[in-house]
Every structure is written in structure tokens, then in C-alpha cells.
Length: 196
Image (cartoon, rainbow, N blue to C red):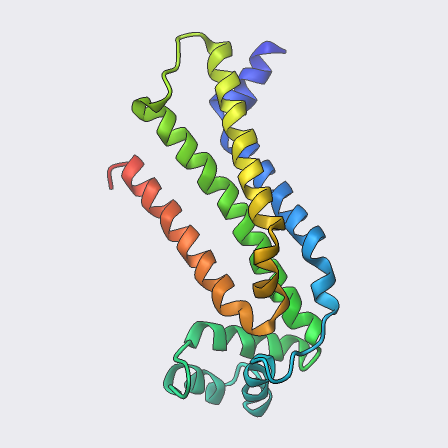
């Protein structure tokens, strides 16, 4: 049994942090789920993003051209493309558009968990926290890192500051930005770690 625990916790740590990240993502969905039942906030940009999606009929060639070529007010091709895609799937039903935002928020919460774990692990391996040769001590610190990363992810997931981006259909801009930012930081840490 001891060797199985060592195999799961120390030799292959990624499955444990992935499980923690998925649990945090599920917590984000659970906490923010009521926003799915929200409607369209008129005069607060939601209708501004949904009207062109309806006018172009969703993710069509004309819609893609509009997303990349139109610069009126904002030049945001990626959020526009996601709105066009959401319209193609759900039409003008707001719950579908809110569900996309909720899915992005859950993804971000999971990425924050993984990022916190990577930073804690890198900090420990760079000498900020000295490990002994004792395997039990290493396992204890590893579990502390996973617990701390999970706590950070949960705080990100349930913090009231995130509600605006999740509840407003037009908040997808911030959610996509966060997804790409967290992904880039994780990719950078991976490249530094492997010297690429």
C-alpha cells in the first residue's frame, strides 16, 4: 500500500493536481450556476454583442469577415467569433450564451489551481523551501502545495469579483483574456522548466 501511495502522490503528481483542478472547476460551476438563468442585459452591451450575431446568422463567412474586419467601437475578433458560434448553437436563448461564460470561468478556475501549484512547486525546487531526503516529508510538502493551490483556485472561483464577467454575456472578453493569459503563463513555465 505504501508503494501505491508513493506512486500516486510523489511519482505521478499530475493526476492529483488535475483532480483538484477539476474539483475547483466544478465548484465554480456550482457557485455561479444561477447566472445561467439570467436574461439579456439591454443597454449594457449584451444586446450589442448579440445583435450582430443574429444579423449575420451565426458563424457564417460574412460573420467571420465582420469579426475580423469591423473596427467600430472595439476590435475584438475572438470574442466576436465566440458570440457568433454561440448564436449558431443556441440562437437568441440567453442561457446558452451564459453557459459559455460559465464554462470559460470554470476553465479559468482550474487553470488558476494548476498555475498556483506550478508556482509553489517551482518555488520549492528553487530553494525557497528546502526539502529533506525524507520521502514522507516530501510527500507532506507536496500535499500542502496541492491543498494551497486548491484553496487559491476555490477563492478565484467563488470570489464575487468574478460574477460580473460570468453573468454578463459581454463579459466574455475578460474570460477569454484570462484563459489565454493563464494558458500562456503555464506554457512559459513549461518551456523554462524544460529549457526550450
